[in-house]
Amino acid sequence: MAETDGDLRESAAVHIQYWWRKWSAQKEMAPQKLAQISLTNRDLLKQLDELHRSKLSIIHKYEMMLNLPAGEINAYLEETNGDKTVVPEASSPNMKKIKQRTTSFVQSSKSLPGI
Image (cartoon, rainbow, N blue to C red; front, top):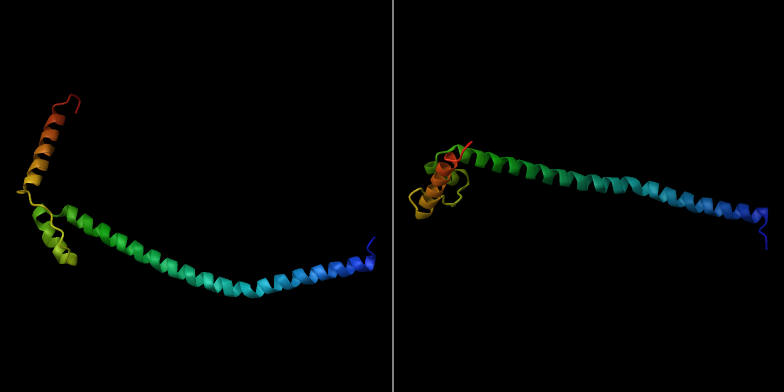
């Protein structure tokens, strides 16, 4: 059964109306969706900025620690944030072993040819 020209036009008009309504509804919702996305992005950017600042703070703290003499590191840590991290002193048995190993490694590497 062949459709008549009028039926085809009516069917096309129904399809056009359907797509027009769908597009109009999406167009009306777009600003609301964009506003929500914008708020989410703003929150994420704030979190990223906070992480970046804390990272820079931590890097600065450890750069300062690297420049301090070994005996002043505990005082620096207590001064900066009350951290109770204890850096072992050179007189502890473990530090003596580490120092001996480092010294022996440096001496053995100096004896290698070409170094």
